[in-house]
Amino acid sequence: MFAGKNILVGVTGGISAYKTCDLVRDLVKASAQVRVMMTEAATRFVSALTF
Image 1 (cartoon, rainbow, N blue to C red):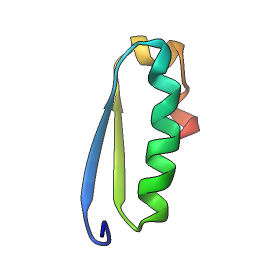
Image 2: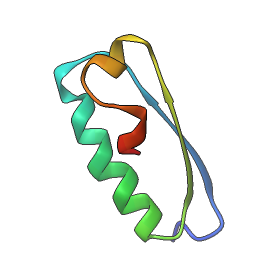
Image 3: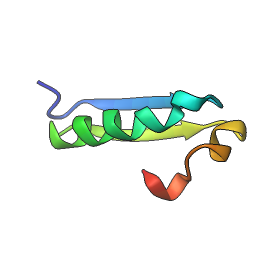
């Protein structure tokens, strides 16, 4: 379903920012090409290295 798709995920500062890690992992498992864009505030909740 996501094979060959390019997906951009935007992460903002909020306590639920950590949930995007699961979303990105699932998209990658489904063969999507995923890029993550984070605000400075988002880095207080998750690290760029997490993705």
